[in-house]
Image (cartoon, rainbow, N blue to C red):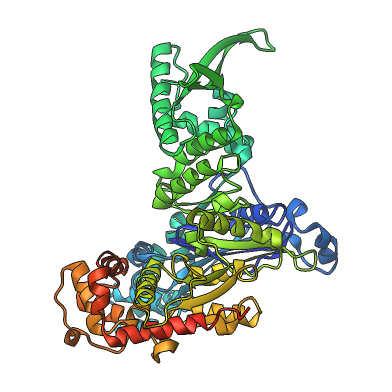
Length: 636
């Protein structure tokens, strides 16, 4: 089951966040300080918390500037639902419901879940009570009078009433009892939706929230941590409890007076944590975790001596040949280590969780933040979804901007809003994205006075090689030397790139005509961020509704590249359909998509032999493209 949407309303500075689409793997919420990012995570956490030490509280969390007026106008603040989550059921979830209730009862594949400030929860499932009635009757053999009465029922309430009526009629007493028993065994007193919820409830993910204040303390009282109720512990202590549980937290080991046994268990934990830390911590690979438990006899208020067990954590630095208490190491390292310890509770647990990270890795160096992003992609998303907030450019991945959600506080009238639309009017909100994109571009040295934005490296290769050929040959028009061709990593990144930098750079955009992002580009043109005349589509150039850069080649020319790249022997007559040639070839291969970069790589490596052999049709179409692009250059 996946979280697909979330919405927060009337919680702290959020009046209505709007419906926020959640990615199946990682969602990155970007916004400046005090914009409402943390409030959004806090509301989700309280909706269905993995830890029981938090809850909603209208007195503290209802928007303060609205509370009095809303209460006076008749709003019951305790009944307000500040958070809603929509989950998408997978095949296993649906199968579990069908195993309990039969086929056809569950008619939808989504579950909506809400909770009030008072703590009451509500869920919405699409269910068919007629199917529930059919499934119950299908397992029974009823006499005709009882069968006729039961089949006229369209829901469980009516069937229960009919069963009661049967039980009171002499000829159908047994039938009525049989129907009542069957209903009770599957549904009890529940409706179909309530019964389906009971099956799904253990499968619905909970929310695990982690922030800087949940970092491990240097020293904790082991007995208190192990025996106190979860509601009595703060987040730091709960993180420590997780670490102790990793070490088989019971009297036999951790509280064992035998130092050797106690030490051995702790070293096992230390080894596991050290291995994890060093795999994703490139800043200093010569650290080792050294947890220990000390035993100290002290006098209690009654004058009796008791033994206090304290967990202490030190970090050994082999580079400098010394160890330091955990709380004397860098903020970034303490955060990273603490998160690894806290996450261990859920990494292999059967309890599904969505991980909420509030400003993760904020104390880490830029390279270490990249390490943590790698940790998210390699470890966390293997079994869990991740939603994290940030205002660091180094926590935004330019190649994965579909993950980004913009968080803006629009004042008391509108509150905080969350959107996938990056056309924010607030420069501070946009800065992390601009910083991430700028850093990525600086790394690739692409920025120039006049930039031609293309989707990927294949576009770059074909255009650059053929333009160079035209320039050397001198008989056809090549790309103007002023152009810098900028591949932005895919069609989905083109509108984002233009939105962020279109007002600051001289841009012309080349796109494949069928991409969804084309409409977003037109929207940018309407808003004055990009000149609409500087959007060139391959399809518009060659007069086809659907076209890719590869369609500028004649079918025979592109097949030479494809066959050489993949060891095939296809001919133009093998291609069927009127769609782009890459789609025709994928269909011929029986796959959804092939690597478009391989034919481009062949073209680049064998350009001396392949370019002169290109047909007139191919050369004409590429020349027409270069003319169209050059025509968009400013005249001065």
